[in-house]
Amino acid sequence: MSLRTLAAAALAAALAASAAPALADDTLKAAIAGPQRSEEHKARDAARHPYETLTFWGVKPKQTVIEVSPGSGYWTEILAPYAKATGGTYVATAADLANPELPEAAKKARAAFEAKYADEAKFGKVQYAGFGAKSGPLGPAGSADVVITARNIHNWMWQPGMLDKAMKDFYAVLKPGGVLAVEEHRSDPRPQAADARDGYVSVANVVAAAEKAGFKLDAQSEVNANVKDTKDHPFGVWTLPPNRRTAPAGQPANPDFDRAKWDAIGESDRMTLRFRKPG
Image 1: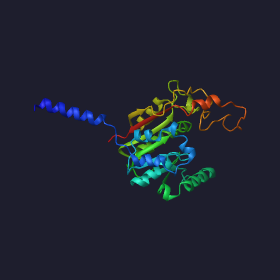
Image 2: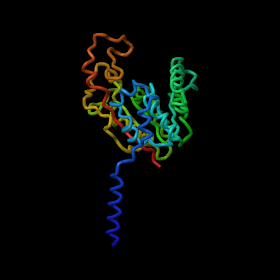
Image 3: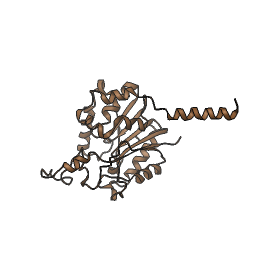
Image 4: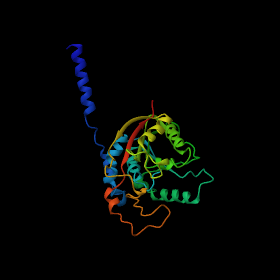
């Protein structure tokens, strides 16, 4: 066989391998379908596409995964049992208890979250890292495989310097080759509002912030796109499910607000990005 024939055969084999679908992660599917998840969170799966999103981000067995500001625990209920089952580690960031200026409300919120996910039979041993404007490292340098931030970036744009700090923290804790996984409300194609006060962020601004810290954009997915989202809602993205706001923030709900139009849109149009730390 000639060298040219051998080279052609090798190229064909490589192309076939790259085109082959990834092996299904049955353990991840089991965690998504598991009884440890709340009905409220399961009801959102049609909008949040947990299996497709996590596999796009490259979540795998035995990894150390850090989730930033996990909120009510949508991803916690999946990732913590998955880490337990596969020999991995799940870390949730929480209010920074080392900050002497931390409000009591933030301390109580962290305590409530820890209590909610304290059952090690269900969730394994969830680990915690303080995170905030004055927090230290999220863990030992180069110790994490994946850092996930879902619907947080718009909040950091309201705080001077916070987005840069967050990106630096993520870069420092990730291993070379590690992944920064981003889900965020997407303003495109319209311009981003100042400081993303309506909750929508442009893809370009997210990419710029990540690249400034040293990350490289690895891939983008439309798995969480929603073409019905017009992005012109009276109370920003929070007009849509799951928040379903009917009045400006801080004001009582308006019982006369007609929600039909906004409920029909569903959850927001979102970017889903995968960045990688070089190395």
